Amino acid sequence: MYIRLKSEKDWLLKNDGIFLSTPNHQIEKVINTDNNLEFFNFIKFLEDFRTNDEIESYTYLTSEEKSDVLSYLDSNKYIQKSNDKLCLTRNDYFFNIFPGVESGSILSRIKEKRLIIVGLGTIGSYLVDLFSRIGFENIIIIDGDKVEEKNISAQLYYSSDIGNYKVDVLKQRFEEKVTAINKYISNFEDLKATVGGFSEDDIVINAADDYKLTLSLAESIVNKIFVGSLIVCGYGPLLVTAYLINNENKAKFLIEYVTQLLNERKKEERISRNSGICLNGFIGSFFVAKMIIDLFLEIDSEVASYNFVNNEFYLTSEMEE
Image 1 (cartoon, rainbow, N blue to C red):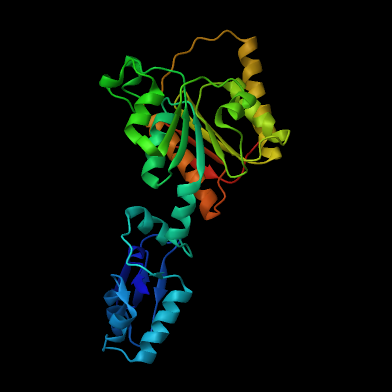
Image 2: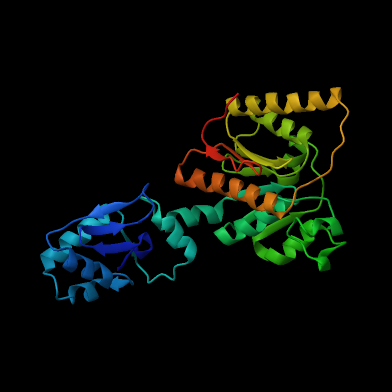
């Protein structure tokens, strides 16, 4: 058995205690013992993976004292235990900081989760890169567009990619983590047939600029023929939004909202041009990724918005009418 202190929680010895996770006051903790210096020196010894024999050979505390410290650390999930000496990544350290979370459990679930990204434009293209780095290895990407010169400043493509299909470019870049499908998706049934059906664990991200597809996907949730999670993301003039839709009430809210937008477009003349730049892509992909990570961490987040004009930002668990 190997044991290591979760040093990524940022332990700091001060005169008035041992502080964890300063200055994040949401998770900051203070520990005080009969002898803070001895306690701190022992946990510093545990900064790297140690075997039971190595811990037994630590002579600055008695066996009983070491047992008490280890029991306290274990009960608070401040240590990581493994049968092997793991080679940890920055992703492990990130997830380990969340209270009560073991990175191994989260990352193994992330590795198996199937993500389906429809639309590889300003937000969708960055999502593929972001998800790959976090550790997702079952990503289906769907788009029928080729890379154009106008995409280069806003999307995750380069001049050498112009003229190639977006799915092919990203497939070549991310290889075995990605399944590429070169086509446009018109509705839920089309998507279902394209990906070979769905399970309740699937997450569909609609990053395509297609309100009718959004309606069809939301209606599939209302009609209980899609039981996974849907995230709809996009942007308008200096505004980025994302919605997590995973139950009937949220789907009805989205249907009402999108139907209103479509009706307004029918009634009015419209002059418009796509103004999204890479900042829209960065923020939108962050929203989507955070919502998906929150599903694993059991943190409620179902609607996100950022306004470039007044810097109003929120990522919340409540949809407002």
